[in-house]
Image (cartoon, rainbow, N blue to C red; front, side, top):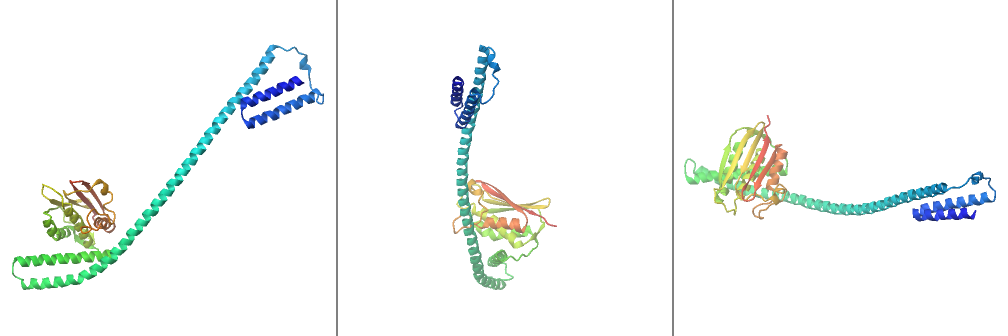
Length: 353
């Protein structure tokens, strides 16, 4: 009996060493205690056992089979527990990696949230600036309109005094009256934007482009810029003519400004070209001025963005142009530009029947 107990104890110790796992070791101990208890009961004949197998002669092969079986069981247990330990280590590593990833995501979310809050604050400041600009513009236009009317009346009286005389001064008076009328149209168009009262009608785009060229001729002459107006179509489009005029004024004025302080040996020319492409009117304004840098090309339509000094621009021109083309005429505007080589703006407007 004591030999059997010693064998069971040895098996338990070897299994525990091979398994090297607390949970499996406890299971093995309980199993060993059960086997030892069963052996004691059988030895004291408290449990009847068939011991006829003891009458048979023992050989070396039975011992080898017992040890082989125990070895196989121990090997399988060791391999199983080794893979189990690897799986547990891998799970722990994955848990640590997930924790790091979670912490990183939380940090990224916090940074992104701060960025969004900052962007919203900047947007609110921009809208506040727009509100102030709208109020200031309405007040300025109200103050400009009265002296403008006075100047217009005085020029009309001078024109009547020189009427019938084909003099140089008479022509200049006519040019001044046209310019004042254009300024009046400008004020009307801006008032329509501040107070949205749309006046839609059919108008000739060629006529509006021609008037814009005449209006900007003094500025072009001062910058030694010449116009090349190529209008291959004379169709009419429907919309607010004063807003369309404002679009052309902004595009041509920007092209003139592109030659400012730009050293260029070739002639300073601005090409204004219109053509019909199916049911669309395409307008091109091209210059060979300073161009737009790559860093600024994605921002030129943003409100209040400008590369000009405070006395040259407000950063609202191209943003207004895009808004009018898209919202009022249902069209689109694109551009291509190379630094020190010039820019081309292309406006596409659908022709409504």
